[in-house]
Image (cartoon, rainbow, N blue to C red; front, side):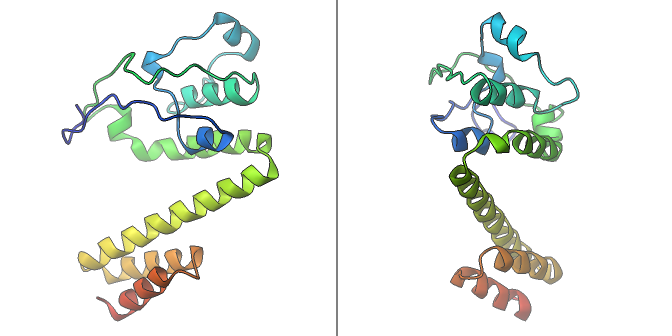
Length: 173
């Protein structure tokens, strides 16, 4: 169980494209098995990574070795999340390593995939800033709302929602 009573483990999503692999860590590490030859041929985990060493290895299997893993959509292992686990207590620290891994493997995407990835990132950043701005407004933090609204508008200038948000943030409600 997750700290807020959520269920774990979560079943892996179908991972059929390069973008799917870029979007999230596709494999729950505790339920994985692979042939030793892959470790011999590709090397082990990057030891300088504390959070995403498994994600980098799966990316190496996918992009370098061209291995298409057999992903069973059933629980093969699990772990308990608790307040002091890295996944819960150090979540923000994962993102720099995720960015590093994606930057390393980005050249292996086609130009079309790179554009699709960039668009997905831009949309996610817009959505996050949009949500944070409304949250800031409801909490009465007008300065933060304006900052997030500005970022949301910068990422999606044609969105009526972004303009409405900017208007509300500038008016302070």
